Image (cartoon, rainbow, N blue to C red; front, side):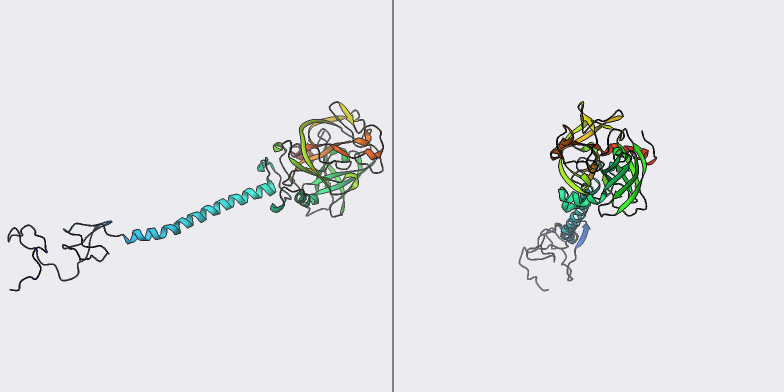
Length: 374
């Protein structure tokens, strides 16, 4: 019988298998030992696994046959994939934020504006993102939507302005611009002219709606929300003072809710911006009359006051915020030349202009389109 060459004590002593208290256990199998899976995260290797024996997983022997947690390939896989999953999550979040940002920018440069409710804005021409907040950007975007209006009546010829609100030629202006007119000619910023007819008027609000004959494909203005404007907000005015089509001026909102009284018709006046002289359209403010006698038939409304330069012919034109949205229809302005009978050298804007809030116009559009009014 061949003796064992193992040093004494190399194998631990085990309880008796029936042949003595200190008998050796049966010799290990000759094939490589295989792990026995007992549950997620735990592996037991058979045999004693003494020092120097490796279980094939990079760990030394377990000693005393105790189970040791086995490495989890799936766990390594999860750790390897986690950065990818994280990057995917970040990409999704970025896409969502980007979409919201784009929407916010679209509202800020097109249908919405600072201090305005986008749901109440009537969409039209907008300022490009790169030009938002600049007078040049506003002028470039909105000027094509502002027209010159020439009205002929028994009182003479007058010049005013208007704002295109539909692509087929609906234009809003002041009632006093076209009051009593027997014919109306409209000139676009391109120089093209149209004949227009009156659709509806509202003398109490000094508003009117006219329609171009045979027009289509016109650029339209964006009607903003005048409830959000504040004193000090920068504004741009575009109109046709003295027949100078597309004139652009700028300033700020000087005051809000000014009680302005204007004439309802052309009685006692030759109209706003008459060529070749004549009185400017009269109005009252603070108990005083400006630019002549308003007559017996008048109306009073709450107006936006601005120091943007307004001159005869700006009536019916647009007061615009820096996002290119119409916030008012210019309606009255103080003219120094008519206050004291001084020479025309004193004529011109002195920073006292008034505009009808655009929300008043929007609330009145259905009435004007129906041909009704006061």
